[in-house]
Image (cartoon, rainbow, N blue to C red; front, side, top):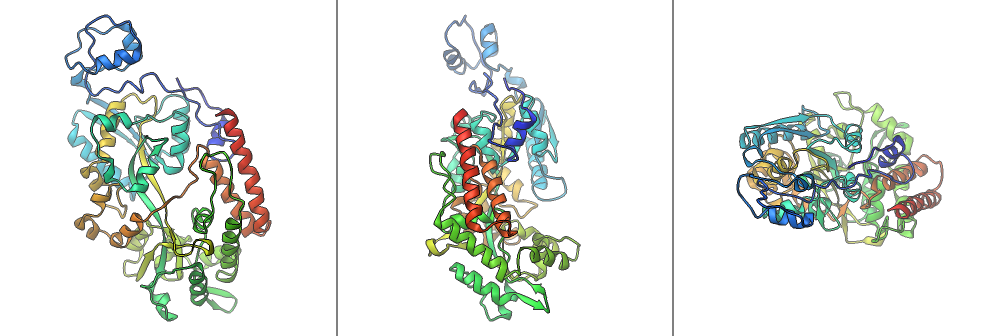
Length: 490
């Protein structure tokens, strides 16, 4: 049974407190008793539960008699009612665009397959809603989480291991993007099916590049290229910038640049923080230089976006990008949606991020994902698996890609010519997805806490609170303390 989580533990899970205490839920007894058809026991059983389940799944008759102790140990359902009733599905998307449109398509497909099931789709169900539900032992049947949740929840036993389902139904996992497979597994077990992955991209404004004599088809091969091209494309009217040549600090930018220069965050065994290194210091010094020289300083970036909003009023780079006031930008593949909806006539290119001085000739492509899971304690876990199985099928992948710029988790479907041609930018993105080589979050049970410290570190040196070396040292100390605390109780 799942224990209740205190407010302090919840804050730790979200990376806002000390070490991640997180979900201390123990695995419900039914989780490993996975049966697709009705469990039948026709004789008295007094052996261990594992033997009971093994015997039970080999029988395919109507239930005639079930020993009480077996009922307590495993879920038994009548075959005729397996695919009837309600199925609760929670996700953080809204219902007007993006992933929410994909979920609506999935619901329609699922209802056609299972007309006797009532799907209860809960939009806008973010971490603030599902974390208390998991802690209270009353989760939905299917839950969408992000990549930075997976390791924590899987390690703490809050998600069902779906590997037995995959093996039982002979699901071919090789059809998924390799980086997506890594993101849905923990310690060689699968806990999720990808809804859609994403990749972080280096965006080029073709018009801005042509204006300074640069070829927009030529991608940057080094950080020197990024700096020099950014300096050439930055424009000023008096003291104010009318165009920023390169905007490098979005999303997990510190992680991106540390990896890009051959650095690391945590040791392979997960016990030691490695962020304080010459590679990290060189990478972050370079970012600080770009922010100062190319962008006019950290404060000027906010002032620039405030003074150059999108015509619709939004004042962040995602919406500003299609209107030409940024020369290059580091952002995710989802920017194609902003281009399509704001200014589809924009001329642009996209490519992989080049390696730093210590990693020349290599490219860094960070990837994350949104994925569907079955929480431990779900009442309709067998039906939940049917939803996940649909998501991972050709039909489910088509549903995810039908009305959005998202690229599904199955590479075979994502590369289909009809789907590639149907939406802006997919052809340019496929090669980037293919070469994704890093997960955009620290791959550790306290990933959210580690990432929070990395974000805090970046703000400290960009705002001038402390120099890069000191900020790195402080992050090293705090992350190592969190790791030690975690392993002391793990």
